[in-house]
Image (cartoon, rainbow, N blue to C red; front, side, top):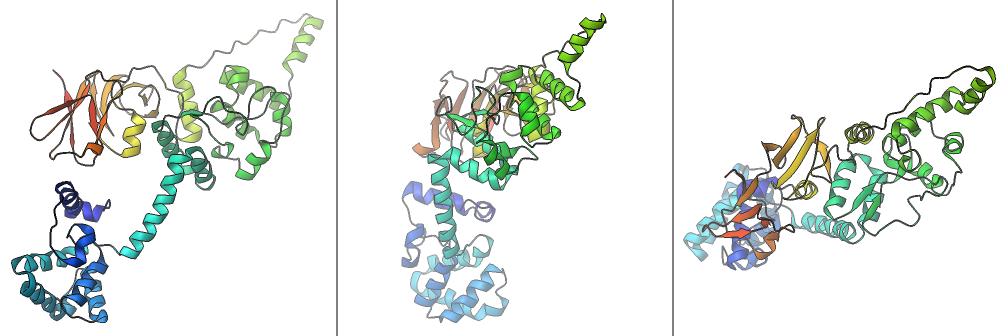
Length: 409
């Protein structure tokens, strides 16, 4: 039911209300599995054969006509079905016939739905129980989902680190990780590194950065990409310094040899100072390579929902963010933000108000208990407003239909 057709037709809301109130729409045995409301094409065929006495061929013709939203060729069959439903159920039967006619807007093949449900269940199982394995394999086949993968992992509480290589005492991705909720990006998310090459590299150890440059088999542009996303931060501290080192190796000029030569011949060599890049510069470097960034461009305290949660669920949660140099952050996740630098309250995905505001989530129908999530901060910055005016403090809704409002007073 979570598709554009059923949502637009109001079927998703209808089924939800029937489930919530434990009611049945049409008391027809063939619809007992779906709260008395027709959802699947097979249900229409079953009603046509069982109640109207149509053959399986006629029922299938009716199904196809409804799916194509054109019953002109099966008008007689549809009228036979309508008359029989009216005969059995009266005015309710006439209404059911009308609903069946509108099935073309949203009806789905049940056998397809079952197949998709199996696939969805298996993927959801691995995504929830083995998220690191799930995304390692997913990214191996499609690196374009990297932003989604990282936001989803952050929503699950993971801290994300750049890819690692074995240089000296530094740990590679396939060795012991610092903590269970840590995800080290695989090397193959970097342009120019294949999964096969990444797997080989994880078995290799290099004594120094220089040896890595010489023996890894990577192009200098690929190594520079690794520098820019933070792979060598533990070695150099400054990414600019690491890039300078790479370029000196590329030119074949050894700084130590130059230093010795200057002492021998009394020539004074001006020492070039390398300024450590700012956080926002690291953010830009990472985004240029990966189209997503790990380093927050500035600091901010978020007292509302995490950005990663709003992104993962696609819900208009309120988020306290700071913007710097074209990037926004909630202190953990990073995203593009084409607005002036400053602190804002964001209603996901792109409605901003200056300052750290409170948020109301206004519902037009009673939520299920499972559709209410208590905010961990518990600071009074967000609340749910129920249809009867009742307030649920420090909570946000986990459902598709609600309004999010800034509270400016």
